[in-house]
Length: 447
Image 1 (spheres, rainbow, N blue to C red):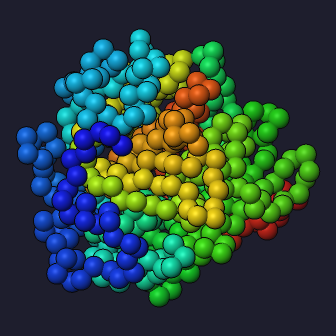
Image 2: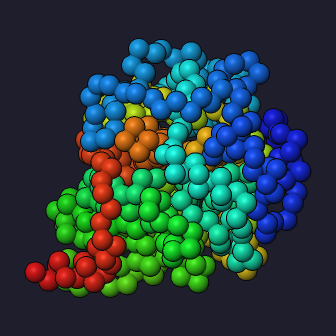
């Protein structure tokens, strides 16, 4: 962490604070929608204008779509900067260690093309209203859970790293989506393999439009998918329900075709190798970070201007053969922009264990979504780095994220989890929640 962070003075103070249990006072919450965006970002641009002010305007799109995802947001724009191994020293202050490591590892192919920054992050009005209420009612608990939150960013004016990771876990999502996806594994010899292709439904009870803080029972997303390829895995199914209860943060069920039965899957989480992608990433690396934050202590480092993947609709919707090179995503289709990010450092908490004992996370200030992550081994050496791809969906409206690409720098491999290339993504009406249960899977498989 010897890079010169442009820390905001206020963030330095906040980083030193112990976990706070109170929401912010009304005079701070009143900044939302004024000097801050309704979700808590700085509304103003940066000093030299390379980050524009946030306007809140919902962007109209035209042209082809894949499901509800526009294929290109700014098709006529050209990069304002291209950074690779040859010129990265001049730009290190705005690059993560993981991005630099990839430039060093793949000097002839890996680069980032930086485009003009567009602050496309918006949300439905009811999300803005709930976020305003969360600012003064949502609090952390002693066991790293939360209470009094619903339907918006829980901590739009964060005081700790733990609050920021909860903002990512409860980021803006639609009520329900259906999608298909692939998990793709890249070997050190350049070969790419399909780990699985899947049909999936996600649902977000925390963001039900007709819900409220009193009725919400603590489950924030429900997921169910079944595998359609490769043939030897076709028919497998996994159901996951994540909640804020630290005693039962995740409930999971798995259907194995060979066993012909549904069984509980208590190990689907944390640093268990993700069998959906042939074990090439850990379960909590899906979506950058997924699951309960209890195994780590979370330190809020501050805020910094960084180059991050953003408005990456073209990369997300490109045909698979155009989206990848041998060892990473194709820089010709992946869009990077300069944005302000919150930097959070996670270290394994006393009495806990994890295969990755230290991680540094970068969260987009406009959406609270995790966009880049570096993971370090027990010797403090950079081992893993993840790139999450935000893309704009006017049907929500919001910037959401999928997929994540996890690089193992030691093994020189990568995997992309929940790739949409050649697949689909559609915002739909919510299903009955009984669809997201092991019993529902068992009933269907017994027919």
